[in-house]
Image (cartoon, rainbow, N blue to C red; front, side):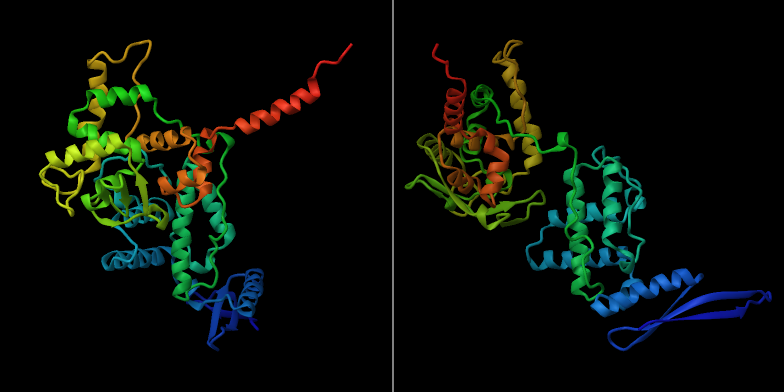
Length: 405
């Protein structure tokens, strides 16, 4: 139980000061005391602390540990995991750092001397100065609402809350807090902020790109648009992953923007994708041309045989292809060139599988999606619905059939 005691004393100037002291014993038998200016504040704290002690939720260090300190410890822990190769990459760490220092523990000094990031929303309502003991579900909800009010997108807000959840879970494992106030926090946006349906690039534009590309880029372009592999998976592909006899490719690794190679993002990402005869032929011809053709060599390396920097490839080789289309007169006002990013080739491949009537589960497997729900959420609108149309025709026929006179 906690008790309240009134305290009075004289200051150096002779004034009488009054305070209310709450004394309580934690679950380890340690006596603690906290002082308040009013009896109302002391009584509210007494009720709260008795409830926490009774439920086993009280942690003595929570009141004295700022969230920012825990965030710093969490990032240090993530860095150690990265160095040990324990499912942590430099990209993951950079994302967590961005969420923490740009939003959770907003630190403007970290951005001094750097160029302005147009994608970064100005945010000043960080919660890094709060103690872990002051973090409640209501506090996290208010933080979420402040993010949205500042103009942070639904997707980014969800990711920030997920990072905060990870930090607080780390605090639980260190016995600093007993429950995670970020658990179950939902971020719901307006209807017009819902994820848009994926629209694959037009076949006409893709054919034009293949036509103007040189023969080396053409192989890469054809492979990506046929297999739907992600850029990181494509750039980590080695010749040992290609089976020319069976006409298939096995995806089991990826490389990130820092050149760090790792296994695929999820277990479902490890998959085998069949290759069409044309793609197999293009790959065989490419293997004969390239000087990096050993089993352990990369299929699509840079000039030195190392990982290709995707950003450089996109800027120097991918986007210029659209300019070549216009220069070659393959587009005009009647049929203008539709520009799209490299990742859209993945959408194109998946859309062709759906168009070819592959079952949804097969599409999920070839795409490397973690679940069928992911596939249907993103591409469900592309699946044919002939059966639905037949049902609606039958209903309409029964309801609105001509009446015999």
